[in-house]
Structures are given as C-alpha cells and as structure tokens.
Amino acid sequence: MSRWCGQFNQLVLPTWLRRPAFRLYIWLFGCCLEEAAVQDLTKYRNLSEFFRRNLRPGVRPIDSSQILVSASVNDRVIFYRVPVTAKLSEALAASKHA
Image 1 (cartoon, rainbow, N blue to C red):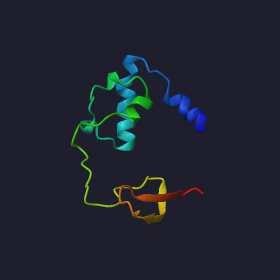
Image 2: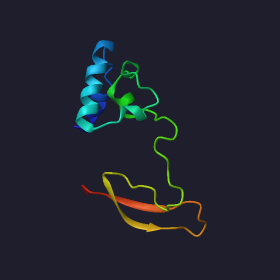
Image 3: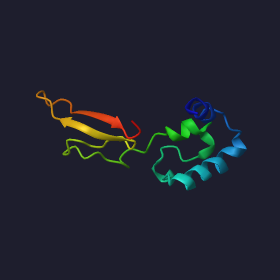
Image 4: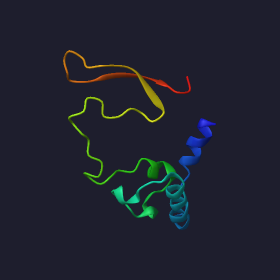
C-alpha cells in the first residue's frame, strides 16, 4: 500500500488538472497556500512536490527558547534528555502504530 501511494504521489499531472487537484487536497487537509513560497499551483508537477513545498521565510518562526521544538505528528516522545554538550537534544520516538 505504501509503495502504491508513493508511486501515485510521483505521477506528473497535466497542467490543466493541477489547480483543481491541488485545490481539492488543500480543502481536504486544510493546507494554507498563503504560506507557500510558490503559490501558483500549476508549478507543482505532482502531489509529492506540493507536499514538500518550501514556505515563505518567516511564516513559521521557531521559538529558539524552547528545548523541544516539535515531535513528529505520528510519533510520541518516550525519552528526552539534554546532552552534556548541549549542542543537540536527543529524543527517541516510537511510532503510535508500534
């Protein structure tokens, strides 16, 4: 199933279909197109490119005062510690589905 989804996301859409297809995706998943660096939907050749789109600078600032910025949506943090070097934080995550 995962392989099929990956192949589907790589399919190059005809230019005339890109705008309605991506509009449907935006509507279904609540994407904010105003945050995208490229807002012209015809510039994204496939769903994979749209999903991995770059954002405009400054639209989602990272709070550098926080130790843990975010965890993956599909994971939960089961262990967290600040290493002695304080250069990196370590977080080991386990999938919810495990």
